Length: 536
Image 1 (cartoon, helix red, strand yellow):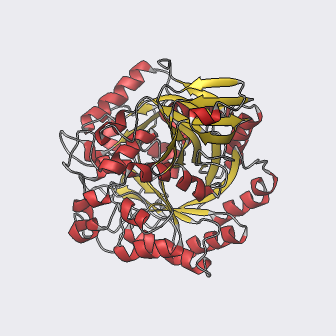
Image 2 (tube, rainbow, N blue to C red):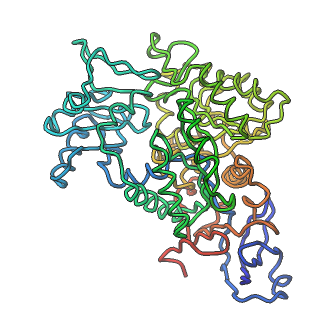
Image 3 (cartoon, one colour):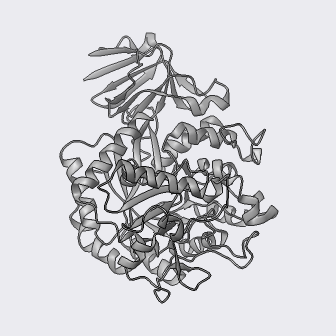
């Protein structure tokens, strides 16, 4: 099947566009002018009517099944106060009276505009119900809060301890319902495990949304428990049933080395991956938490809480052993690190593994938010891949200085600096922490402003990326992270025909309009997987 696209603005490379492209059986054959390519035979000719076409966008780190799960639970992202969190919970229960466990996601105390700006606690959730267990996750997913009923069911008291996490105590010396980092899984264990059918439902629902915003590849951390076989099997079945609409790469989380060894003995040996649509992927680890929750691991106390330095979710010795085992098995490692101390630990571990300074396996850092200039330089020197989330600035601009102070703020969230140093920088959203819409993310990368266009001129505007650099970070750089840059991430001959057609020209519109771009059509391997109802 040969298809010819004409009359387009097709992005090939920085400042390089073509107007026509020929594909055959899902592979790009040629690009050029309309006149040049009209000489070729084609089964179908598609007139782009001057629209802009980009390579398919590749989110280098998100949680797809969790996205789908968010769509089926109590959404707390709009809450502007603790009272509103309670009202949203009450409303959900009234609309779903058969609920056995109330699950809520997305609250953020930094967004509260009325009343106290603090973490919610079990006493707040008890206002919703004391008859059923309640678990409400903070937007970062590094903090969860349970009501009194949830704690009682799990027999949690002031003596309960969790390695790599914290169960906070209130003024009365009793648990106040707040769980962070490694302790989050404990409070969430009150939630009945999902069936394979529910996992598939969540995956497919999120996938359908993802292709509608232009994603043709995702690198997704969906395996996050000892019960990993169920998740692998659910996704395997989606692949076998030919329901996979985009290219999918696993990022599997095993904080315990015995769990990782169990994976190596099973899925790693016997999983079926074609490495074209479905990739075996990488080991994803957590070194620390989030800045908003003050669980990011810092080298000194927080500027606004000097006695707090964050949470070490995985001590350095265990981190090294896990990384070493992965490296020996030719498995790429990606480590969540946000605080400067966490990032330094990760750099130190990788430097031990990458003796020849050639990062063949593309080991990398997820988030990389609070950094010193020296750390940025070392990351570039080692060739470590970095998965940045510019969209985090929408909320973090308001708290960065309070958390880390003037000096460290200047070299943090340094997307453009690290990119210009030559480090392999990719962009992602960490959805459902933020929406997986890539154009909202690119808007922030390019403007470094909130959606209300503040701060004027951009937050540390020297860190604003160019439009083409941001697009490349979402395409060819994200493909490099996976070691797939030889066949996807560009619209060039020999590459797969993964592309997205836009409703406006991202290269010429006012940069503040980038967030409003809509996808006309998403194409994977030459096949349309999404088409806007408004498309002509």
